[in-house]
Length: 552
Image (tube, rainbow, N blue to C red; front, side, top):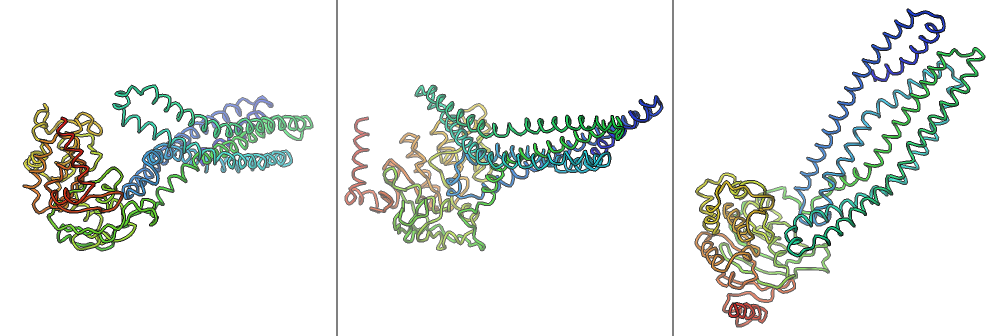
C-alpha cells in the first residue's frame, strides 16, 4: 500500500513542477519537488521489492504446504484409491498442478491488494482533477470485466482438458523410463519416440487451444488503454485551451488514467492466472478430499496368533458384487502353517493374499487374522505383523543396508547378515567392493532380478512377522537357490504362517497344504501327493513342468 501511495503522489508532484515551476520559471520549485519525487520513488521501489519478496515467499510456502498435505493424503490411500487416479495423474497433481496454483497465488496475492488500492486512489485523484472527464473513462471498467468473464468461461474447460493430456504424457514417460532396457533390447526406440511425440503433440495442441483464448486479453486491454489515453489527451487539450484545466493537471490526469488502466490490467492478469490454475486447484482438491477406501479402526486389537480365515469372501475391484474376481472363498489356515497357492494367470492369487494386510478390503464376507476381523486392527498394527514380498520387487535409492532396514530400522548387523544368509543373498552382497554399503540405483537397477528378489526376501525376514507372504518371489532364481531358500524358511519360520504363491510346483510341493485357484474359485486344497491324484488342473501343471525338466 505504501508503494501505491508513492506512485499516486508522483503525478501530483509532476503537475506542480509544470504549473508552478516550468510555466512560472521557478527553478527552486522544480528542484525541491524533484528531490521529493526522487525520495518517494526510492521508497516506492523498496516497498515494491519487499512486496514482491513477500509474495514469492508466501507462494512457495503455500505450494510446499499443499505438496506435503497432498503427499500425506496419498500415503493414506488404499490400492483402490491409487487405481482410481493412476500413478501418472497423481505425479502431475503433485508437480504441474501445484506449480500452476503457486504462480496464480504469487500474482494474486500481490495484485489483490496493490491493484484495487491503486484503482481506488487513482480514480479519486482523477475525479479531484476533473470529475466530468474522469466519468468518461469509468465506462471502460464494465467492458473489460465482461471481456474477462467471457475469456474465463471459455478457457476453463480447455485447461482441464490440457491437464488430462499432461497425465497421459506423464504415463508415457514413466512407462518408457521404467522399461528402457526392454525398449533397447527389442529395438523399439523409434516406436517409443513416435508414441512420445504423439502424446507431446497432444499436450502442445491442448495448450495452444487453451492459451490462444487468453491471448485476446492483453491486446484488448492495451487497445482500451491507448484509446482512453488518446481521448484524455483530446478532450483534455480542449480544456487546457479554454483555461479550464492547466497543462500540469492534464499531465497528472493522463498519468492517473494510465494508473487506472494499469491496475485494471493487473486485475485482468490475476484473473487469467486464476483461470489457468482453477482446473489444477480442482484436481488437487479432488485428491485432498478423497476419502481413503480403507478406513482405519478406531480401536485396536492385539494379534494373539497368526491364524487366517477367509469366511465367504468375495472381491470386486469395481465394488460390484456381480463382477467378482474372488468367489465365495472359505479357507482356514492354522498359525505356523505353510500354504502354497497355485493357479493360472488371472486366477486372483495375488488379490487373495492382498486382502490379508488390507491392501484391498473385501466386497463380501470377512477375512480374520488371529480370530479377529482384519478391520478391527489398526492398519499399522496389522501390517507390522504381515510381511509381503510382492511380484514387482521394489528397492529404493540408497545402500543395500538402508534398503534392508526397511524391514526393521533397529536391526543389528548380525540380524541383517542372518536374514541375508537365509535369503541366499549374503554371498553375492559380499562379492561387491562396498558389500552391505553398496549403493543401489533407483529401483535397484544395478542388481539382477534374482538378486533383487533375494534382497526383498531378506528385508521381509528382518521384519520378523507373524505372517509372511511370498508372491512368486523366487521366480527369477534358479531351482537350487529356491530349494535353499525354502529350507531356510522351514528352519527359521517354524511359528510363522507362510503363504507362497508360485508358478513352479517345486516351490510349494513341501507346503503343509496347497491351494489351487482357478478364475477366482478354490478348486482344490490338499498336499502335493493328494492333489496329483485328485486335481486335474494340478496334474496338468505338474506334467507340463516335468516335461520341461526332462527336455532341459
